[in-house]
Image 1 (cartoon, rainbow, N blue to C red):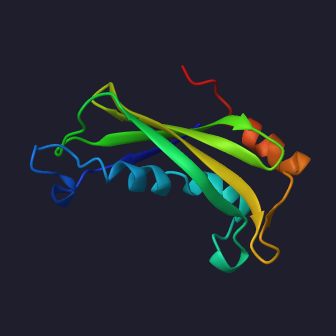
Image 2: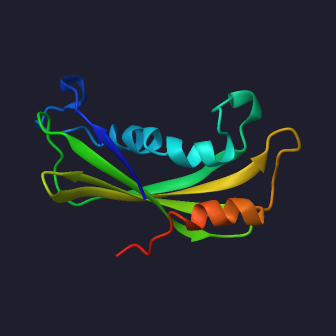
Length: 132
């Protein structure tokens, strides 16, 4: 599992006084960098090997400005050419958001998916969890 600590910024709040729901997908994507580095260690976009096929979020509680947030990132499913990244947002010991992003190992030149190698599967399995 990977973890990333984020300090919410005032500009990320909404009129109701909590972190706007449009911010969480960005925090989750930023927290997927360690997963991206499994496929592109130098993070060179000219040699990028992934695409996002979809994502979903579930909001469990409000996330507030003024308190740090911890984002946990794990792998929850590994397929032939795709895998799911399961993430949670925690603030003051409370899970405020969870979500899953489906990533596809992809060749941008040929515009098609590519099977995950045994080496990539091993690396992903090192961060595997079963979501609750």
